[in-house]
Length: 374
Image 1 (cartoon, helix red, strand yellow):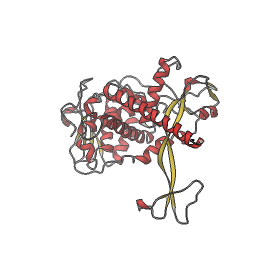
Image 2 (cartoon, one colour; image 1 turned 90 degrees about the horizontal axis):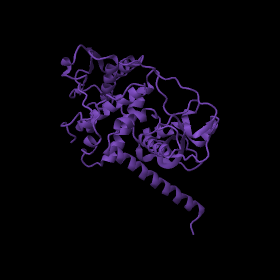
Image 3 (cartoon, helix red, strand yellow; image 1 turned 60 degrees about the vertical axis):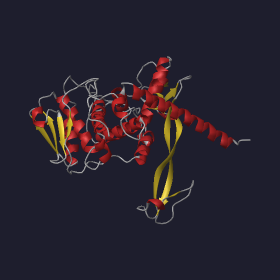
Image 4 (cartoon, rainbow, N blue to C red; image 1 turned 90 degrees about the vertical axis):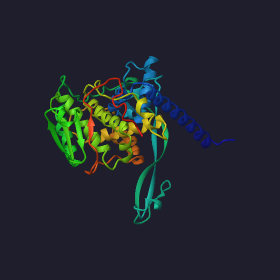
């Protein structure tokens, strides 16, 4: 007869299996549909969550809205049951939680950190030996639940400051903040009079000259969006990023997606972003399933955009964390994801072919048809 512990383990594994199936379904729907840009705009508002958990929250909130359990089609803030209680609010009776994947971490110790095989996992309550270094590492996942603010009642939620933009204008300080990050990566920012000077493109990153050029004959919003696109190339697609450079189509999708998330986090209109249908690039990587390509691309984009946004001194939209909540607890997911897959380092200034941002905006025709993914 199974013990209580074995029963609990079996129940947890069944929940995880169900959650992974739900996630796979959400990603497969993304692969076959046209919602990549919409999914990224959503992720920009919940950017402290992993891309997988963002999709899970999105899919489950839509179901709750369609069932009449959520008043709005778009969630605002999400937090755990006790986190809401800590903010003076209570989950209302009958409101289902949204299942997400929470990290399980373990403590590891070694006296020789450079030797990867020397790390040993510490038991519960075990202390390291003298001279050992201790680090935490993600060792698995478990099911957890969060609720949207609309599913709770209680103390009012403070209004977070939000950017206010006029049509065609760029968010205050965004050009300067992005330029500083481009320059910190070893590149110079150039503003050129027209697209004829950069092969007909809106912007161009030249890894040989270590320059990022943006044409000036666009409105300020388009210029700052282009600069964010080129910064995505700088951070993700330098000469050392061999795999990304082999799949040019995905490289362009990633750069444009980073720009979209940075723009969405500042309240900018994302309807003009030229991101092709998922099926035109996710299915072209040899040896990888489209679902895995989408998940990996989404997480790379999210972490890169988050790294950019964290360095900006600009007014940004809320990130899905209720104001007043201890961010340390809600950011464990992001830190665990970073441990599992290191954040992209800025490209080193070495020789490589220039990267262009197309000047045309073919929506919804695939913008990079014919470049191919090898």
